[in-house]
Length: 41
Image (cartoon, rainbow, N blue to C red; front, side, top):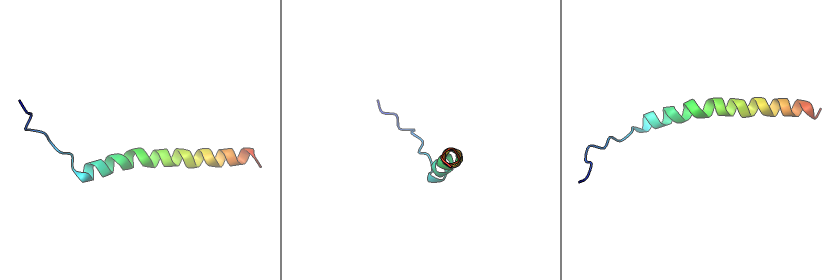
């Protein structure tokens, strides 16, 4: 028995999901880097 009613996720949905995850992640890395640089000055 094969499951034939598999829904494929659209590329737009995947792109939006990546943006939702990546933007806060990059902000956190940037903010952490700024704070770390301040420690060495």
